[in-house]
Image (cartoon, rainbow, N blue to C red; front, side, top):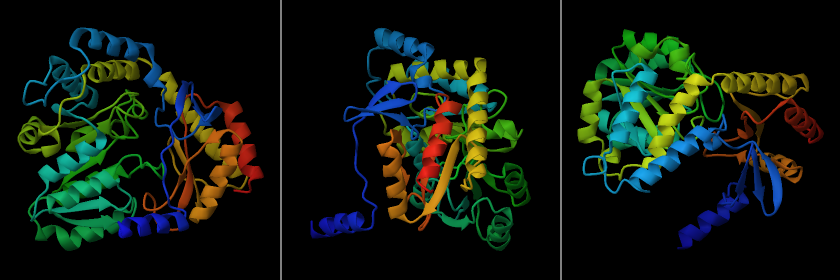
Length: 383
């Protein structure tokens, strides 16, 4: 217990303490906290689909028909026709042979990589890849080599030195990075995958629903879906619901059904969630305008900040401003909080040391009027 107390004391002193806050979602990009209303810039509900009438109607209908829970794991009696229907729809959406549905993005990444990689294998992974990716690699027992963020020259250097020493090798990256908001150089990474005989795994969590002609993600946008072996994504962000998927080959799916512990030993997600997910794919494909508008607003926001002399990162709906030290990020976030903007300061270990930041997660509810007022506040705070 002394170690726990010391840890908490140190976290508090270094400005790294995290606390839970109970908010009330009000819809249209706003939340209430302690009787005050805020414009929310921390949500991943990019397209506002969590309140889309088609998703709500589908979820309610599923509750009436199937009840509130699946009751067991998919390999027991919890595997419903709804789950299979969703996987068929995912595979068509992602243009892959098969798909497997998981309870969350974290469970997907930990389970997939933990099952497919093993001692004697190697994983070449982007340094800024999500914690769940790294946890899955560590769990697998494979050797891993972290290349500098989006640096294909460095990744090829590592591949050239190390690939021949291992049986299987994987190249792993996100397609849109959650903290920097930039895209992976997929074309170059696919070329390396082919040159060095690797399998490739991409995490499309923050790209699904936003990029590509059909909203399938950056893999679709780049025309590389067929060349990427494993495409993971989530329903909990732009698709407005919950759960995750892997789109891949039939053979890999069957292997994971028999080996992936996070899939095998989890109760299947509730029918209402699965039904909402089915509806979300239909909405994404049939209603492209919201995602186009979202990216237009993000570009406007970046350019307007840069015009004020504020340095920003990203090329997506995620717009981070790196401010450096933790204390400065906390102070700036508090200044925005006082003005009615819900912006959470992101600090290590979520981001590297001395790269604390304000991360603005834009949604379709953020129009030019809201963004212009926010930019003025940021300028007044001397960001």
